[in-house]
Amino acid sequence: MSLYSFTRRGLLAAGTALALAVGGGSGAMAQTPPGVLIVGQIAEPKALDPAAVTAVNDFRILMNVYDGLVRYKDGTLEVEPALATGWEISEDGAEYTFTLREGVTFHDGSAFDAEAVKFNFDRMLDESHPYHDTGPFPLAFFFSAVEEVEVVDPLTVKFTLNEPYAPFLSNLAYPTGLIVSPAAVAEHGAEFGRNPSGTGPFSFVEWRSNEAVVVEANPDYWDGAPELEAVVFRPITDANTRTAEMLAGGIDLMVEVPPVALSEFQADPYTIHEQAGPHVWFLILNAKEGPFSDVRVRQAANYAIDKEAIVNDVLEGTAEVAAGPTPPAFAWAYNEELEPYPHDPEKARELLAEAGAEGAEITFYVTEGGSGMLDPIAMGTAMQADLEEVGFDVTIETYEWNTFLGNVNPGLEGKADMAQMAWMTNDPDTLPFLALRTAAWPDQGGFNSGYYSNPEVDALLEQARVATDQEERARLYKEMQAIVQEDAPWVFVANWKQNAVTSDRVENFSLQPSFFLLLDDVVKN
Image (cartoon, one colour):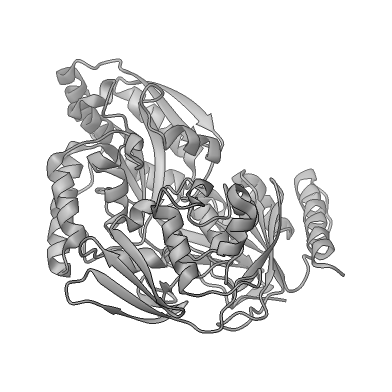
């Protein structure tokens, strides 16, 4: 039986099981094929080109198809060798020389070597590169310090930075640093994101839009062939439908279990997996125009929203109230002296009156679901009620995830006053550098969609990313957090503990603090 018909059979069985579950039938649970793991994803991927996407939803697929020069050690955010067997750093911290793994090939049969590494980074960073037009590359910021990538010999590549850059190795382990096949990019051009080729444990088979992405085991994987025969990633946007599919046996692994559904998986034949990680859920406030251009109104929104109630009642205790822009998972850089904004409606009303903003009309962008977005519609509705209680007039506009990103990432100017957002990051530099600096406004290629600007914050972030001493980096980040909390460019809502559920047919699965799915050791009976 071909892999195509094998996975199609599994999807048909899943559909039958779901129909029985939803329709009230008493049929047995679906029997998805042994050796084929069916994963319930939260959304359709945007692309399968790691340099061209930003969402963890996409990363969960990509980390199984590609490798980077380095990767995160299992269960940590510590960097270890991957396609590079080792590296040397110059005394001034501006040169990184990597020794590459020998005998590795891409899934399309082309060779992995130093030229391939240079191609990948030049494609992202050099506007004159012949394949730069296969982008855009929204997280190329991660490697903005790279001045040159030099092929020393076929198995040695050197990166020269324009200055020391503390997060460089960590960023190489992030999906933006995954290495794609130059031959496949040359063949498919702008369509490479629909025809991916990497060196990872699984190789791409097909992408059926709004139905499934199918990958199969790479028997020649340099780190050992996977236990699974194939993985099917199914986009199931509606959380209730995803839950019903899991209960009916139509999927084997479900990510981001809705908090209200956790109780349904507390006993056999399911296992709930939890893992803390660097996640922050917040509301972007439009600081450039409208009511939130006044810091008092932004602070009022922080006081108005009852974050404790959201965490306890909507999220069922699966998160903690956020105090600022940096997740506590980065313990060494987290400012423990900061306390979350308390729920204080009276204080919110006072600030609105002081700013002359009583009755301010707010357009609020909410998504149906997406990477790390928890229970966005329920959360958005609760926030709308809290804001209206203190005098805001809030209109919610709801969008599908990729449409939502298409509205929010280019900036809120002329469109909205407030938007939900969630980030899961690999380093305390990442989120503030990409979403809080003045130079990260959307028209400059960043994700500062609310147009926040504070020169003091800009200076602290620039200093922190070139500091080679971790204690100094920590001091700078903690100072930045205090200023940002006071300026309130966001409503700081929650830090989430990620979860997933597996059936009793799945073994050797664990969640990672990176929020990625690593499936090469998973067994499916």
